[in-house]
Image 1 (tube, rainbow over the protein chains, first blue to last red):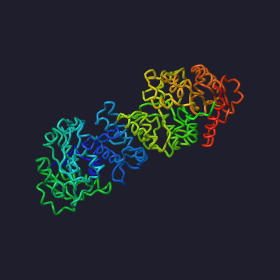
Image 2 (cartoon, rainbow over the protein chains, first blue to last red):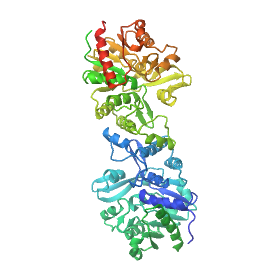
Image 3 (cartoon, one colour):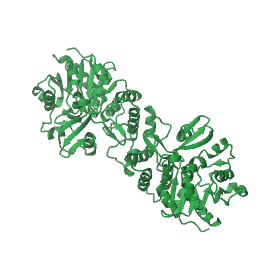
Length: 315
Length: 315
């Protein structure tokens, strides 16, 4: 099939945002849009925090914190350290610069601006040309079912540092969520979907399970990049979750997960070269590429290779 | 009369807080309580900000910013600078550490804690032993009447940098405000009131005009320290306001203002040595003292002299 001309990239936070940045360097804003998970969003200290939108925003602005692997570059911690000294909650490490983003977003939302429009304003202010579209303006909240009970995602992920053993997930509000009309409009002539190397359970699922999404994208060639490389997650708890769910923590199992739960979704699958020997075990057109992205060049190379991969698909 | 054993000190922000600190060094928490103006309070960026309570808190904790003359020591500005870059309002310069205080207070208030209890928690966390009592837990908001119309106090004071010419003031909510019960209880055996060198119009007035305050304090010896020294305000717009109100910007006029508007309030008046020649013009027992406080020693010395001044009163 031809190389797609209009891509929707699905992404969660830091891991997926690496490929997102690569894609943004070779496709302009008419050719590429991002559909972003909002299941991690939560209200904290009176602020609406959208961790995945923010990670993508900082990555696209090339303002992501390289040392920490999360948050904004040039960050300082006077606010949160002082808040702790005053008896406030400091488990969620809000940087001083990061606070400004949450405060401005919360103010816009409080004035009745949609999350989509607030994100458009904030990304524009940060010099980002591409549309960063929350998958929905409605609240979708990921709940982690674990051996310590049900936990709001950030409580599991940050407060409890992913220590609880997970047994499942659900997305509160999903049934009543409407797919972002900006995404719906984009899908009308979108001819390629790339699922970035994000967590299948808590980053990708709450995007593709929004009512109507799978139907609207059934005819669009879709590929996914494995977030699992050589039995480990490059970033985040995906591998640990798979073990706790009694799924092998392998790229093959990620492909099987998508095929089993979302039959027909994927037309192709991208794994890392280090997993090359598993290619034959994947019941999908697959390719093994250098997918561990350290430099900007790595990000661009993977983006290029993903786009080229569509041309190898025959569906 | 004897030296008082239990003092209520009335104060606004930075100027009054200097004497407040001096008093706190010689009187313990059983001997001294602060009644603080809340007319400057406002909600900004979703936060409840109490500028005078905060200035006093930072002063008593000896965490006030000496270089700036306002705010907290060791402050940084990453939040507000970033907020400005994101299109947010940055005219009120919220420091990164200062933000923590407002956030924690707002969270406590949001949980139903009173401003009195929230202030008690925050001052305790900052190591302050004395009670910092907002004059009321009810909203009292100073409105500045000016040649640019009516302005909320912080809009006048910070956003417009005191540029508008004032013609008057009123205190929205004052009629329905209840004097803080903590202050009412303190007044039962309080035997001396010191009005710190704060702005008579926008710092002291919104404290002493709380319904019931003047009646409850009529029998208690009260002295005031002039915020005007040698025709100028040590801090803030008091002198400029007096000129615009067609009042001479003098210590004598401050005394007359109190006597005219609050007859019987004052039993004594403290002016600076540099205004010593005006002593005879004040129709109250008065004393001229070194009242410009640069060092901690200056603050303590003025506090000591104020306490001694009560012994010179005969009423």
